[in-house]
Image (cartoon, rainbow, N blue to C red; front, side, top):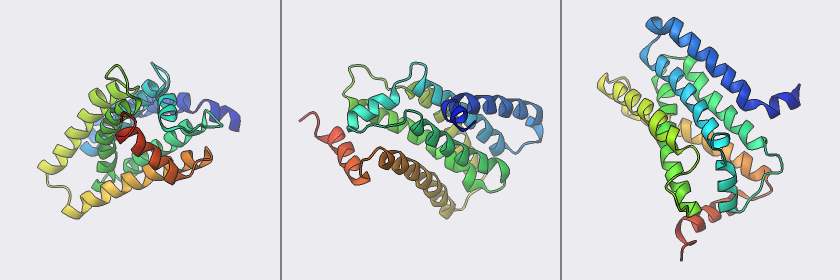
Length: 204
């Protein structure tokens, strides 16, 4: 059973996204706006994962080659990513009135676009694309911008809460990243050095 889950994580989370989509359709009028947007964002993230890993796929291979580290288990990084996606999106669904939790995934949506643009630079790609860029730009960012504008226009967050949102998003992301890097046998400090080299020194 464990092996089945590990090998089919993306398909299982896709099935969950279908359930979430049905729930949103049925409960749309009764749901707070931000709760709706988090649900839609979760569905968008699943589409994003498909673009990164399946259609066309290859994002993980591109990054590991650019940063010179390998994963002994090809499913491990995908599983950690899915766990992070569930944490950052499902917790706000159960606490819709805690606004900073709902804003955190929206910050991730904007960061995803930045990350995929950086990935293009690290890979010294001949084309302006990295797997995941299209869904980041056309799905995640519009949802994120709409939600953040809604929060600002309705004055739903105190200034300090924006910091809480950012730290909540960033802490989980860095933890997931460190787990994947360290289990590959690389020190996280060396990983960061490789990132810096790929960004600023590779072309020199």
